[in-house]
Length: 199
Ligand code: SF4
Image 1 (tube, rainbow, N blue to C red):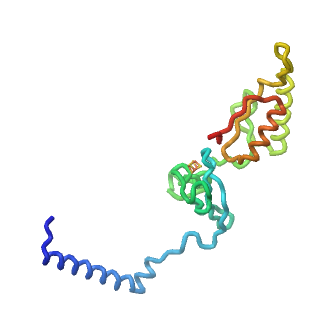
Image 2: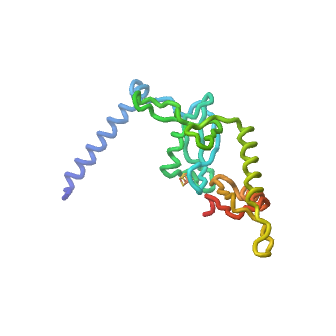
Image 3: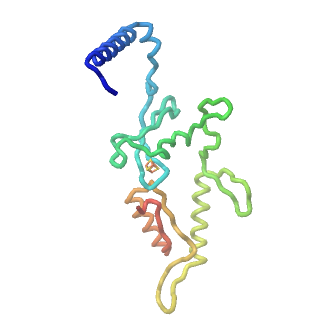
């Protein structure tokens, strides 16, 4: 597009007039009241958390008001993601709240699991179980499985291992926790050990 000197001054004049008009409008008390909204994070407490989705372990800031999560975003002070979250991590808010398909209102996710659940062998349904009972049952099964499958000697060689148990760690354990998990599994004779955070 060719711009003449005259055309240039006309464009600049028009832009200046539009800016001045906007400033006058913005200074109007009525408009200021109309456009002001309460800051969405007012009166919230900030809690830090870690993304649960992948081995990256990005940090997040959770804003909570009256015990309710109202916002979740990347933590700018976290050394891994420095405030950023991928689309999956940015959708973590939906683990707790969803949009009601009928009313389009934000509601608590009715499918959220808030306590340990167990599905018995042959069963179709999940049943709630207390943490205490869940840990006891898991410990019992680990011990029984280990005792039933433990191999002390193979071909005249001491091996002390079990092929009956495997261990897969999650992405949120830190190095020290992984060290302890490894120690515990090795002490049971488990050799099939992997971790989602191995990257
Ligand atoms: S935000 Fe994305 S990259 Fe970071 S831990 Fe979560 S899923 Fe992984």
